Length: 367
Ligand code: M6R
Image 1: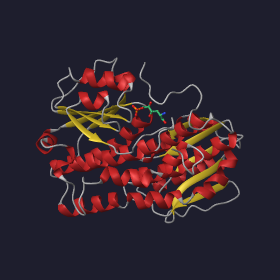
Image 2: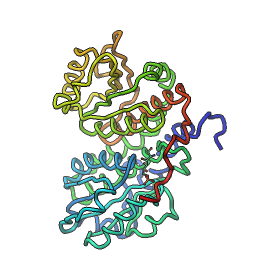
Image 3: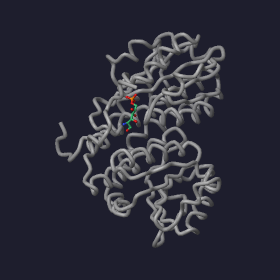
Image 4: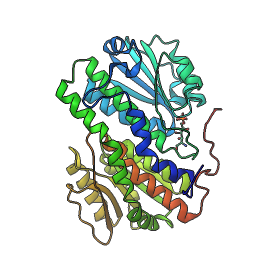
C-alpha cells in the first residue's frame, strides 16, 4: 500500500532508514560484528578466502562496485566485479580459494542466476548470495546467504534494495577484514558505530527533499546530464545516472571524474548539467579541480557535498550539503539518497510513469 505517498518509489525511498536498520539488526552488537551473521560455518570459510568475484546486474552491480573498494581496503583482498551477462559468456578463470558473490534484489534475474550456476562448476570456495527474496532461486542455490531485509520493492527503480545491499556488503567487507586479522577491536567498534549511525544519516539526507525538488526543475527540459564521482563515489554517480535515465528518460552518463580529460570534457557546454558527488574525503581536492575545469567551460554544476568541503554556490553552481556525510563504509549509501530524490522529482515534473517506467520490468527473468 502506498499510503500517503504519491508513488511506491517515494515510499520506498523513505523506508530506507528502517530497511537499513533491519538489515543490520542482530548482525552487529553495539561494538562488534556477530560471527553468526553469515551462518554457522562462515567464520572459518571467510578466513580461507583469498579473493572475491562479485556478479550482478543494474543497480545491484553498482552495489558490487562500491563493495570492491571496501573489501580491498578493509580486508586487503583482490576483488573483481562484473556484469552477469558478460561473466556468464566468458570462460572465467577462477584462482584458488575465491569467493563468488552474487547480488540480486529479486534473486531471479536470469543472467545472475545463470552466473551463479556457472560458478558452481568453477571450483569456488563458496558461493554467497546477497538477496532480498528468501524463497528465490538464488537463495536456494547458494552455499551461503545474506538476506537484505528491505521488504517488498514495488517500484521498478531500485532504491531501498540498493542501500540495504550496501549495508549487507559493508558487513561482508568487515567480516572478511576481521577473518584476515586486519581489524583490531577499536577499528571494528568504529566501523560498527558508523554503520549503526547510517539510518539516522539517511533520515537527515531525506530532509533535503525540498531543495532537491527545486533543483529538479533545472533538469526537466534537459536532454543530457553527466554524473561525476571519484573512488567509491564513482559507482554512486553511476547509480544516480541510472536512476535518472530509468524514470525520467533523460540521457545520463556517469564518469569517474579523472576520465573527463580523456573525452567527455568535449561534451561540456551551457546545456550540459553536471551532477557531482563530492564529499570531503581523500579525493576531494582531485574532484574539485575536475569540477573547476567543467565550470570554466560553462557547464552548470549541481554538487552534492557536505559542510566541510567548502564548495561555494554561484549563479551556475548549486551546492547541496549533506548534514551527515558518514565515513568510508556508509557515505555511498548516504550520497545515493539525494540522487534518488533528484531523479524522482525530475520524473514527477516530467509526468512519466515513475513506478513503471516504459520498456522495463521489475525483474528481468529472461535474457
Ligand atoms: O533483482 P536484481 O537485483 O537482480 O535486478 C537487477 C537489475 O535488473 C535492477 O537492479 C535494475 O537495474 C533496476 N531497475 C534499477 O533500478
